[in-house]
Image (tube, rainbow, N blue to C red; front, top):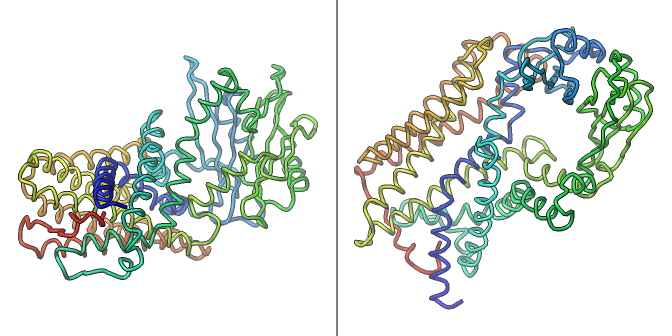
Length: 523
């Protein structure tokens, strides 16, 4: 490649990285913790309700009867039940009520698998889900999915351009890291982690694109091939199974456990994960059982039966009999590392945090290069510095405070989850305001890093101070979610403190020089 072309590609790589950096950092930070989403939910919820997996589950009939007697269930809304498992031994029931104005009120309740009684409102223990939503759509309803999808597309472009830029020296640069040289260590770290995590980054960029941009393709296909009939498209893709027509003839929901036994027999060998109802309380009611085959990498099975007489209405033993649904399930397993144990998730977690480091060093190198240009706008430089400090480090502090709040706020507080999310966004906003108003970005960076580390180290102290008995109960059951979450936070805190220390020993507001960044063969 000619020198001029390589230089132009390098500039494009830098600018693309800069434009997407703030959103991409939050996406990867949320994604790193989302790998342990179920563990975080268990850390938050099961330290309050530390039930063991019973030898015999309470009757499914009793669980449904308890919900039916305590709530005015909207029969036009599906009901979903997550079945208990050793790592999450409660029933989780999702349904809706209809208020006097005809509006749906969604519910998520936790039901004991020992007694069948309602234990708590599950929507109060959703910090793990919140971090996942940050990763998927930035917690922005509607358009957030498209924003993340677009950012993921540009992330894929940045990866490809980075490969072209470094191709001639990709092997030699992998073994080069000048940690003691102030001029080069940001560049070497950027290149080293970028090369080391290249397969991971390509896989994440591709699978993320599939998840976030599939709606765009879906709309295009619906318009071009199905003349605007999106339901017909979904039906052909296997995503819509027509429910039986409601008969408006009430019928008690009973004999459900025998249908559960039938599902096990029809789909064996499986682990029933979800049970759902359509037309609940009507003679046209149906039950759908969704299961995972534990002997296969990514095979899901499904059975739909009539509640009235047990007639099998739909059955599949091979990924819902559809390549689209099966393919998406394979991609989901790859994206979230759910096809292996905690060792793989730890590798994915480290690589995700390493990607955050790549994003950070990319911005630092851009700032270092532009600061030498006398024609560069000082306002523009301050904007990028403030965004880098406020959003990158502010998101870390917000996440730390989110964990602390999830432990401190009582489970009886009705607005518990909303308050935790509000704390997260307020912390990010205040960090951004401080970054824009501060003239000492280095000192503010040290402060935010040390505050993040201190709060994360405080979380294990709060755990054992406030819930030690229940934690010991969980450990006696062989459940180590609390220790796992605490370990992640301690490691993250130590890294943040080490970075703060390395920044603090430098002279105030010292400019990081990256002389090689101006060469065309570097990113």
